[in-house]
Length: 343
Image (cartoon, rainbow, N blue to C red; front, side):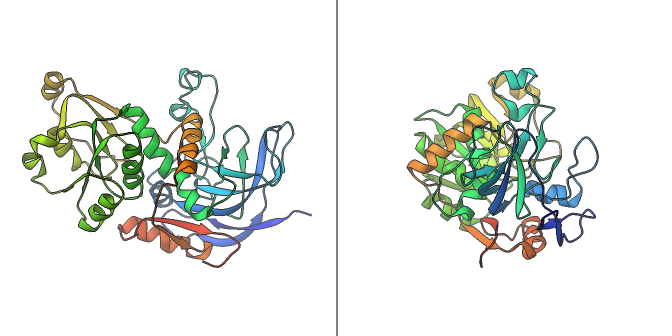
């Protein structure tokens, strides 16, 4: 008899997710079945929900979500690295091709043939999820799952951006956007020994950024590019703000030969002068979540000293409302669905 589970199912883009009973998946060869304790809710989920982001197939997965933490309840054929009862993290990457230059360079987050949870394959807005055993993350066995879940994407993306920037101790790192990703980045950058500047339009977020280690805070405004303090020129600027408005300030803030990292999903063109680029030698690149090796580093860093986050707990039935708050910009901190218990 087929077993069932509760899931939040996307039937029509932009419409409320339907909470319904669906068949519980079974792990295939090389896969594990994870009973979820919690799933974070990410801004990428909003893009998929609204139909603004679609896989190459054109049809997004019916179950969104890619920030899961839970326990292994079953292993598929050929799985040797996981045992039933172990705690596992389920992140964006379900798998990658393993054959391309990016995969051979251990940069599988840039694999153009990757499949992602909540995008190409069923995600974590459900009581159970199937994960590729090679890509499931080892997470601390103890600790609040709702606090761990956002690390699977938000934390990893922040860590991956800093690794991409090759931040070293003593450098000045400007973090644009002090939402969940930016606040993780501030904490990680401080642990790497960087001097951190936090930039945001919200003074409350700047106060929180300062409490988490930012030595300097600047209120974002249309005039910030002209008012950027000369003493705070940055070696690295990382943009987590989902707007092209950050770019004028970043080009004013960055030092010659500095590094600008685009970490937010911004579809609009950004204002850049190639003349400025050739004169300054500034290096501009993008970043995409993070690799399995980076996830292992992040978990070690978190176990040594837990990264702080403001996490609002919601039920599966409240997921559409949570997505709506994220879309409207009214969510405070991160949000996480908690399974099997009151919130």
